[in-house]
Image 1 (spheres, rainbow, N blue to C red):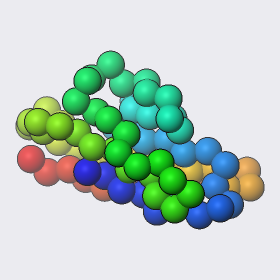
Image 2 (tube, one colour):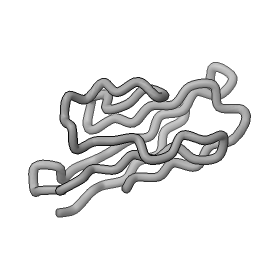
Image 3 (cartoon, rainbow, N blue to C red):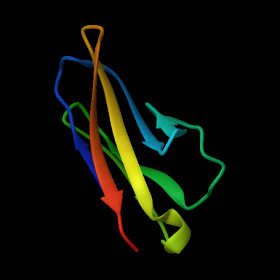
Amino acid sequence: THRCTIDDRVTRVAWLNRSTILYAGNDKWSIDPRVIILVNTPTQYSIMIQNVDVYDEGPYTCSVQTDNHPKTSRVHLIV
Protein backbone atom coordinates (compact mmCIF):
# COMPACT_ATOMS: atom_id res chain seq x y z
CA THR A 1 0.00 0.00 0.00
CA HIS A 2 1.31 3.44 -0.95
CA ARG A 3 -0.16 6.30 1.09
CA CYS A 4 -0.11 10.04 0.45
CA THR A 5 -1.32 12.55 3.05
CA ILE A 6 -3.25 15.49 1.62
CA ASP A 7 -5.27 18.46 2.88
CA ASP A 8 -8.10 20.74 1.76
CA ARG A 9 -5.80 22.88 -0.41
CA VAL A 10 -5.24 19.97 -2.81
CA THR A 11 -7.19 20.29 -6.06
CA ARG A 12 -5.77 17.32 -8.01
CA VAL A 13 -3.94 14.12 -7.09
CA ALA A 14 -2.25 11.33 -9.02
CA TRP A 15 -0.10 8.24 -8.44
CA LEU A 16 2.69 7.46 -10.88
CA ASN A 17 5.16 4.61 -11.32
CA ARG A 18 8.25 6.05 -12.95
CA SER A 19 6.60 8.22 -15.65
CA THR A 20 3.44 6.10 -16.02
CA ILE A 21 0.21 7.43 -14.48
CA LEU A 22 -1.51 4.75 -12.38
CA TYR A 23 -4.39 6.85 -11.07
CA ALA A 24 -5.46 10.46 -11.56
CA GLY A 25 -8.02 11.19 -8.86
CA ASN A 26 -10.52 8.32 -9.05
CA ASP A 27 -9.72 7.61 -12.71
CA LYS A 28 -7.65 4.49 -13.28
CA TRP A 29 -5.07 4.86 -16.05
CA SER A 30 -3.19 1.62 -15.36
CA ILE A 31 -4.33 -1.48 -17.24
CA ASP A 32 -2.90 -3.67 -14.47
CA PRO A 33 -5.85 -5.18 -12.54
CA ARG A 34 -3.64 -5.62 -9.43
CA VAL A 35 -3.41 -1.83 -8.93
CA ILE A 36 -6.42 -0.47 -7.06
CA ILE A 37 -7.30 2.76 -5.32
CA LEU A 38 -7.58 2.05 -1.62
CA VAL A 39 -8.46 5.45 -0.12
CA ASN A 40 -9.39 8.78 -1.68
CA THR A 41 -10.52 11.12 1.08
CA PRO A 42 -9.80 14.79 1.90
CA THR A 43 -6.82 13.66 4.05
CA GLN A 44 -5.43 10.56 2.33
CA TYR A 45 -4.87 9.21 -1.18
CA SER A 46 -3.68 5.60 -1.27
CA ILE A 47 -3.22 2.84 -3.81
CA MET A 48 -2.55 -0.86 -3.32
CA ILE A 49 -0.74 -3.31 -5.56
CA GLN A 50 -1.97 -6.85 -5.05
CA ASN A 51 0.32 -9.88 -5.49
CA VAL A 52 3.45 -7.74 -5.71
CA ASP A 53 6.35 -9.22 -7.65
CA VAL A 54 9.89 -8.16 -8.53
CA TYR A 55 8.71 -6.24 -11.62
CA ASP A 56 6.78 -3.84 -9.36
CA GLU A 57 9.99 -2.72 -7.67
CA GLY A 58 10.95 0.91 -8.18
CA PRO A 59 9.89 4.49 -7.52
CA TYR A 60 6.26 5.53 -6.99
CA THR A 61 5.25 9.18 -6.86
CA CYS A 62 2.21 10.87 -5.38
CA SER A 63 1.71 14.14 -7.24
CA VAL A 64 -0.60 16.81 -5.82
CA GLN A 65 -1.70 20.18 -7.16
CA THR A 66 -2.26 22.97 -4.63
CA ASP A 67 -3.04 26.53 -5.72
CA ASN A 68 -1.25 25.90 -9.03
CA HIS A 69 1.87 24.67 -7.23
CA PRO A 70 2.65 20.99 -7.84
CA LYS A 71 4.21 18.96 -5.05
CA THR A 72 5.38 15.37 -5.04
CA SER A 73 6.06 12.67 -2.51
CA ARG A 74 8.12 9.61 -3.45
CA VAL A 75 8.45 6.10 -2.13
CA HIS A 76 10.68 3.33 -3.44
CA LEU A 77 9.17 -0.14 -3.40
CA ILE A 78 11.69 -2.91 -2.72
CA VAL A 79 10.56 -6.47 -3.43
